Length: 261
Length: 286
Image (cartoon, rainbow over all chains, first blue to last red; front, side, top):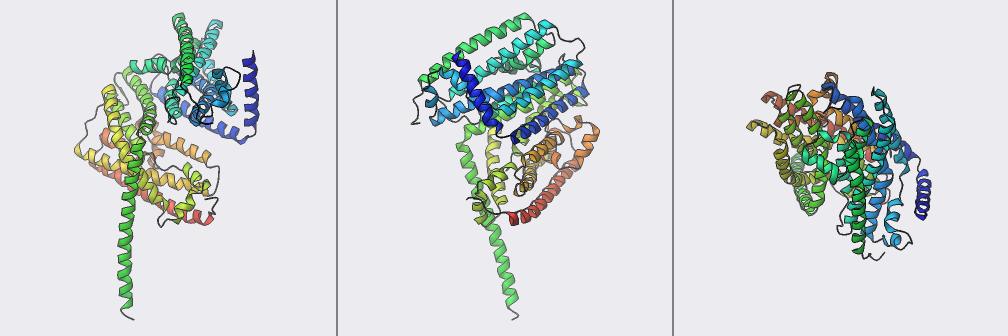
């Protein structure tokens, strides 16, 4: 339970800190509006030339877009800031400060930062998702909704694991400054259901970078496409990935010698 | 008294040719330095280019999917055309990376401009030369990427010799054109510290009207009509289309001419803005 208390404490301090910079909220609002507009324009263009994309209708792809924005908001609020700070700390030798605290190091490095204004994307993603859903005639069953929430949480866990593995690589590789841009670029693939991509790319954005699990699978749940095998695979993969990530983190930590912090 | 004007004219002429020669030397030296620096950072350069590839690959896959659903083409654009378009896109996109408007803010805030102003030439010259040198490294690095992408996506590419020639000129025209536009826009930083919103808006307009998002023929007619009167497509769609598309020689030359016109307009705007900007500038830090 101590872990939750620490997490909550960091969260509170982080939010208070960010609340000082209120103009950032307007900036974020503006940037999110632009990104959303571009996303919708792309969909409008695509569906001005076709009625369905690989079996997905326009409202369904609006749902995918909503989930991609929403998950992107979660990544940028919590996962990415912590992981980039971890990378910086390792490089600058400041990780010692976290390691000497009497808490689990992995837990600590995962909750120290929060970018609260990125919550705008959580909200706008939810709205887009709601608009998309309202245009789907069939509606969403209770079981589908449950599967959606489960898939979303599993997806977030997998993205977290992916980022922690990447950040752990910083124990060996110094120059990591392009990693964020690389991830942002690849994350854009989530705007479309993973099925449209050719095989090598489909597997890459499913298992190498688990974007399909984070965006397409929840979208499949909402549009009654999800079978229980896929959901079971998501559970299995999330558990295995989490265990492997924890092992890799500890392995990396053993290589860390500090750098005269 | 009658001799003196001739002497002055002569020395002015000498002065002018000397100035051009030293400017050329500056360009060469800066470009060489940029090449050497960027080869040092080859891994970072490569990751950056790889990250850039996701965007065109997504567009390519989406439009290929639609084309295949409709029997092989969308509005006459075939699967092979889309592959060629978005592969050449990656090079043109890289040529479009210039000294960006947002960096003017950095330049002013960090006091770098003070150093630049002490030099006997405009900072603009330095920017053009440095990024031009960098481009040579980028083009070299791009070749293996293009080969890889071509093996995966099988583009239809069958250019005439003249098209290749125009393309080779047009990518540098695109580079200069975008440089002028971005440098002019960057002048806003002398008047406001909140340029970011304007830059974002500008980038979005550019994304939609340049051909970066989709080949322009896929846009609704009214969007194409607007794009015709703006410079954006000459830095993006035109260079790609010159190699990939089927433009006549007259159209190719007209495209190059349009690039030139917009470069001159951009330069004129920059010079005007710079003249006023530099009067407003007062150094901070240094």
